[in-house]
Length: 197
Image 1 (cartoon, rainbow, N blue to C red):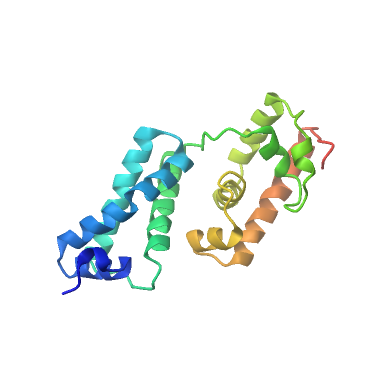
Image 2 (tube, rainbow, N blue to C red):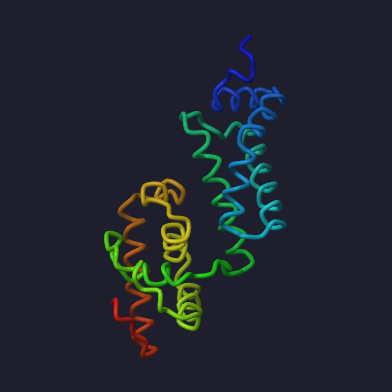
């Protein structure tokens, strides 16, 4: 029989599904650090990250025990997607907004094309504008806010965003487009403008 440490993630997942508890220990050992880091990066709170990490692995255990995991060769992506969904469920359930602060560069980047290098030169955006912008972002529909934060705060490419949110790349891009349109509309309605718009 193959040594557990020599098995792929997919083989370990299937082995655990078949009743080998040690296979799960190896999976946990392989992925706990990266998964916790991902969750912590998103929520920025140690206690909450621990809670969501545990909740994610409860879901992993449940899905594996019920044999709902299909081996596709992308166990790590599946695991990150479960963590992402757990985080989003937590935010939706509690209606808590993400506490990530918007830096001046990030605030301006929201209004510029990705290819523009100009936003790095604009360090004059003050904390009041950043705070107002954060309130506007919080008022976006969930799916638009989610894509916007994943792309600008977590620097995720749209392909990865599409995979994590279970939508096509075009849908992810569309959600980003509408998020920026809505932010511009909100800025306009408040009489706010930035030179870079």
